[in-house]
Amino acid sequence: MTVTYKFHFLESKETLEYLIDTSDASNGTTRSNTPAEWTRLGNCQCSNCPLSKEEHVRCPAAVDMQRVVEEFSQKPGKGTVKVEVETPERTYVKTTGIEEGLRSLMGFIMANSTCPILSKNKPMAFTHLPFSSQSEFIIRAVGTYLMRQYYRKQSGESPDWNLNGLIELNQELRLVNQALWQRVHSASSDDSNLKALLSFFTMSSSVGYSLEAQLAKIRHAFMEDTDLGHFEG
Image (cartoon, rainbow, N blue to C red; front, top):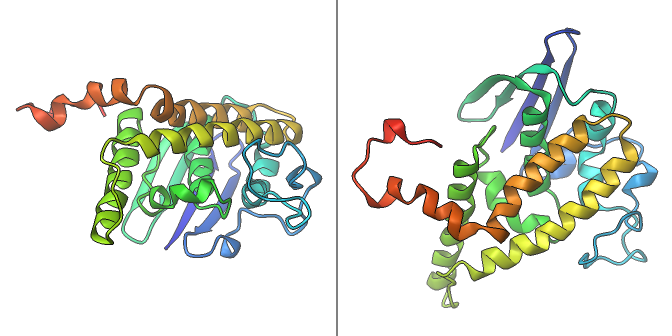
């Protein structure tokens, strides 16, 4: 599956376009032809990174997002863009702040990365929903995890219906997020990249820290007769 993100900057009339291939990240256009120094594995390496600097020169996630980070590094955190996201099934269009559009793109790139830890979120890339709200993010994160447990059960493995593994995974992801933020900070002269990453990290960290509370907020939509027209997603 290929997905295209187009950022139309309303004030400057500039357009930035990126293609992401979920079957092979190297086919996308979010990478640079010349890997930057900040993408070296040893630069702000995640404390839980399973890769060795002797065998892997570059951080896979940093390489995957290098072009995006560099092209947005001169963009301010505030500003309005029209973002078009083209998928094989449909096209999403939203006029929004740079931060929200970039958050959506970076989250997608990270879920599609070949990083051994981030790649555990591959199902989230497969079911990518641009501009997700907090509730939508929780529903997708929990839903894709439970689907995996169903397939594990079918394969004769022990499923985890209590979501313990999901919480543990997101605690791992928190360490990755912290290190990636440090990397991007060293490569960005303005704050759009940093604000987008912080926004995404805040959303994703809720799975590890307040999952029960997040699930409680949306319980009414699944367990009670309710007018879903008033459901705040």
